[in-house]
Image (tube, rainbow, N blue to C red; front, side):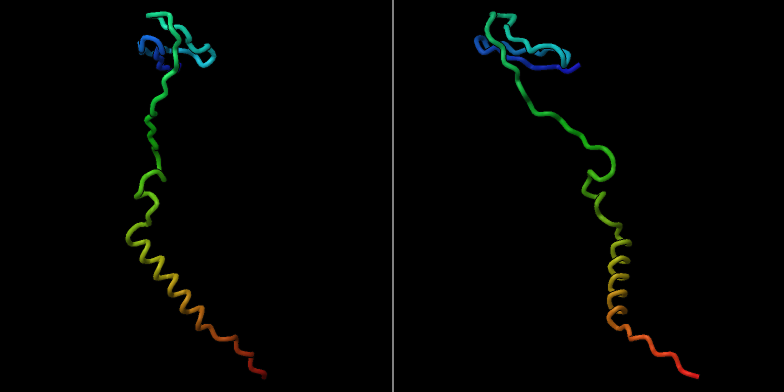
Length: 90
């Protein structure tokens, strides 16, 4: 069950309440009987697994040079392709 933070608008009393999602929000301060307001804060988020770290998206040191070398080789050989020769007639 989630924990909600409340603060009184009259006296400034702050407290946390553990409530179900189905429960209505608290509206009356237990200290002075004034109006309550929910407080919203930042949430800590942790991403686990592959793809979330800066190093996960980088290719390996040897892999990136091999990939660039192979693409250069293919492009240079692709540009120098000669048309197919016609078969010799017998």
